[in-house]
Length: 191
Image (cartoon, rainbow, N blue to C red; front, side, top):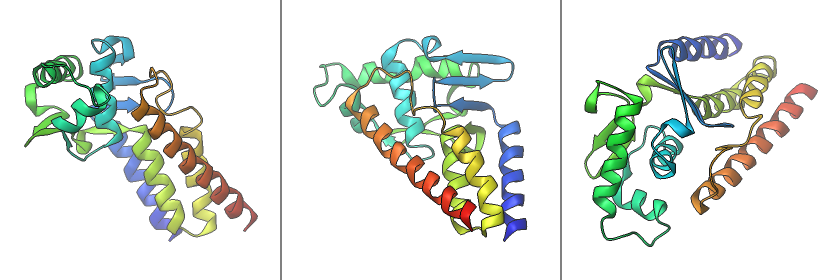
């Protein structure tokens, strides 16, 4: 079990190094594409940034346009919400994946959008992977996995977000997960 967890951690590291985008949502939002680093201010404003954040919090799962519109405008969308959302996605694609069009990490799916996890390294996803692996590993292998996970989670989820209701809910849920990981790390250290 120790060897398996160690091997999976090495696979995660190799995947991170070969990803088209490396995205950090724990703390201030930052996106690394090759030698270019983007921050929240480089994404075309608060709403396009929130579109990206919503997709990242649903990493690898499609989010419908209807759901995104509901979250972006807190259940009270303007008349032109759908074309506005589509323009935000267009702006994000130009910033995140220049020249890649629809073939980059931000993909269109039937009725919505998804971030393609095979070409994006997301710190929040690494946190979840590490804590999941630690939960099934023997204590000697679990402790380093939990330590790495807790180092990743040392900053607040979406630390620079402007506090829409959906972000607050996600922060609270993540804080619970971090608390659980701390308890598990303490129990594992005692073993």
